Image (cartoon, rainbow, N blue to C red; front, side, top):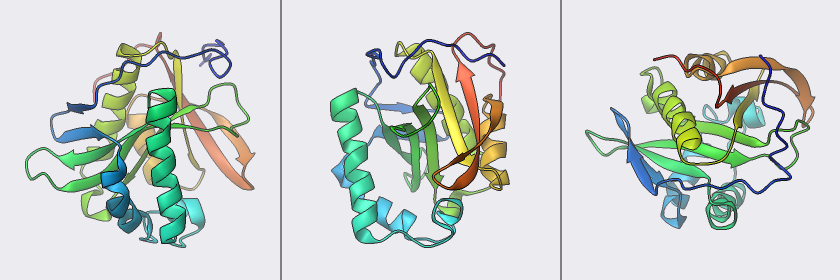
Length: 193
């Protein structure tokens, strides 16, 4: 795949993303301080962060800093993650949405990222959410390319990203770990789930 070569990190990307939207099974709500405790609980679970921290749950301070940064992304850049809830039950699922990778060595730095509670694994919710976020980003912003980065050994995340229509682009060492990255370009033909 040839990824669009527009230098988005140097140009101002225009976002007009909704505060909330729904898929068949998820309600995604713009990240805010009200999600901090849920996020702390989520990333303190070693299973959730197995491929991020080697299985060491995040401390309250680490999780709070990340949650605050997610709020700042929305305020300063006009995009960020959404809190994800099941539409039927209203249960907290986790987060799905955009993150900006300041230190990513590639040209494209907007990443679609997700972390779900293990209670919701294996049901296709991550794939549904990632697919919807990518589609929404292309419909509501000037961003031409979005990436996804994960550990090369995180087969579940790789499967989610691929099933959501993103294309494998390569491997690299980043933050002292071997990672793989995928991309979706607005000009790519999207496939149904």
